[in-house]
Length: 181
Image 1 (cartoon, rainbow, N blue to C red):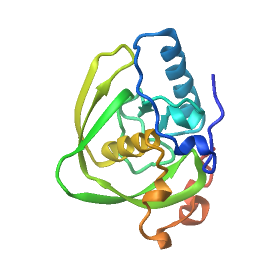
Image 2: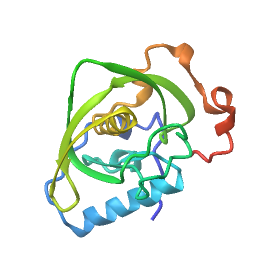
Image 3: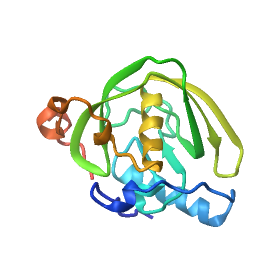
Image 4: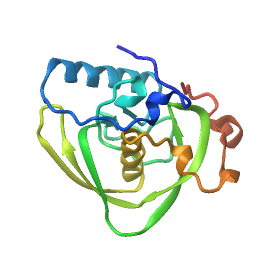
């Protein structure tokens, strides 16, 4: 089921989310299915549970098609479809990389955000199986963006130079036909 996506200004987006305590439940499966339906309907690269009003430490991102590029980020490398519960991030090195980001909770806007270039993340899938990955580039950016939501952080809070923040249709006219909710 496609759920409404909360938009910047809703105080629920600023709360720190609670860890998931039970895995493999019907409620968790339903939440994740709804998150994927909602993310796909909005052409998102990822989605965090708080964005649909659920204050749990659950994020999803990527595509089931390993060659698929996200229409909102056509130049980015594909990211594997992932369910990540109770994530823990650890930067690998101090190297930061600036890149354009948008957000389904901040529709119509993009900004340049610094993120760690390489990252080690751990967590669990929906059944409680451990996930342990080292990633870089766009994959690392997506994970950091989504996990920020779990801590009540929206990407505009990380923008350092507001001369590189604006409306997507002005900054990237070629993307104006890509639906963004």
